[in-house]
Amino acid sequence: MIRKKSNLLFFQIGQRFMMRRMFQTMKVNLTTIQEPCMVVVNHSSFYDSLVLFELFKRGYLPSNIVAGMSAEGLKKFPLFKGIGTFPISKPIKVSEIKQMYALAKTNTITLFPQGVEEHQEKRPLTIQSGMDKIISKFPQHGILYISIYYSYTDGLKGEVACRMDYQPASKRTSIQEGMTYYLDCLKAQVIAKEEERFVRLW
Image 1 (cartoon, rainbow, N blue to C red):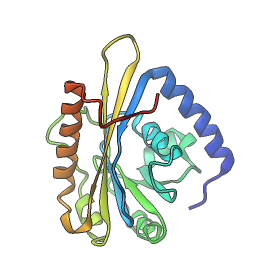
Image 2: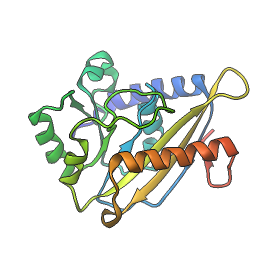
Image 3: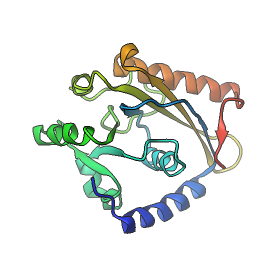
Image 4: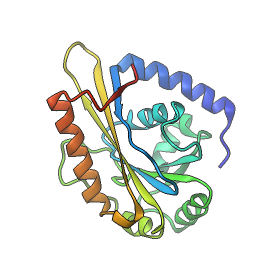
């Protein structure tokens, strides 16, 4: 997938401005990644993609990563075009599935299985129909779960906490089970103010 340098540069400037304006801190609990893998991210905010980009530009994610984004969202926010995204409609189209399979041969696919933004406290997490089936087409891939949790304590700006957890192909769970478990673990860490396993990005 072609990434346009001009798009990446413009996006990075906007991403940095928005993240620093809205959040006073960002921290991440890192893990070791083995490839090939697929990346799965919970979706509760517009800022999720900006958080993901922050991890990417710091080298915490594979350099060949590409991300599925709602077709409607790409039309609404054209800023995301040309930086390594591909469209996913609701319901997903056959042509989009074929494109995803083709991309997965040489790229690390990133998916937001919920399909839409949901409150981070909502349970059970809603998983878009057919998502587990799509991921099952890649039995040799491990799953990298990226959990994102937003909180507000002191001041007007929020805080972002991320947690990365890797499941090898031989120990994969259902997407809903994995996303829920790791997101709840992250929430517990944030509430308990467990800082020792996190890298503070700013």
